[in-house]
Image (cartoon, rainbow, N blue to C red; front, side, top):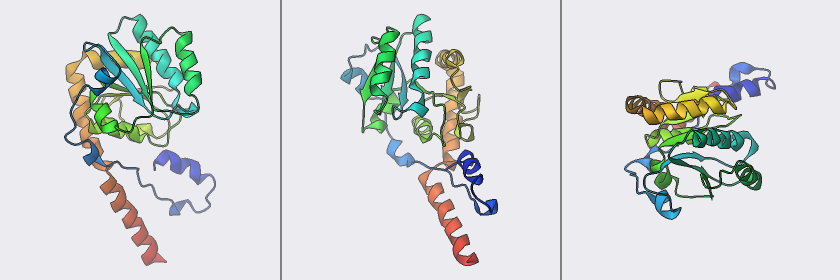
Amino acid sequence: VSNKIREVLEKDIEDKSKLRVVYSGIDVSRFQGKVNTHILHKNFGIPSDKLIIGNISAIADHKDHFTFVDTADILVRQGINAVFMIVGEGELDEEIRKYILSKNLEKHIIMTGFQDNIPDILPEFDVFLFTSKTEGLGTSLLDAFACRIPVVTTNAGGIPEIVSHEVNGLMAEVGDAEFLAQQTLRVLNDHHLREKLTENALKTLENFSSEKMAAETYKIYNEVFYNA
């Protein structure tokens, strides 16, 4: 999955030379030819002039949606003309809803629940804001790359193996809502930065396709078979 996962496994494996890393990959073809159809604006009654800053992930502790809400809170207080969308479901649904209410952000943050049409949804995001505190690799970031959506993320777990700060995305320390907010504004206000990040993100995808993953897995099986 990632070198970060390898580090975790190494603690319990005597012969570490037998460990190999095959990065998770995505089916890039799912996103090819997809355009912004404004499905979110239509389905959720979002004014056409509003930007969408979104997150797609399970509503679970390690995804740290609390920091997503904190980042939204900072940006709303700064007067950003955007709505924030949490796409997904999970065990912390109710807790996150209560947290949103406690900050009076219910008019600014939409929780969509589970959605099975991610290739139609993602092109409408203006920023993909990912706030995980632990992460094996973060393959939903690759989905954003495929849709040319600029990424602002934490540096949790294996994410730095995908995202290089200032190269194909913008990164902050885990839990740093202030810096995440700053980076979100940067990418929204700087057209040239957005272009650079999304162009480089597309190039990064070449190393994280499902075809590449299959080829690497096949190569390892061959090694095992012929060395047995």
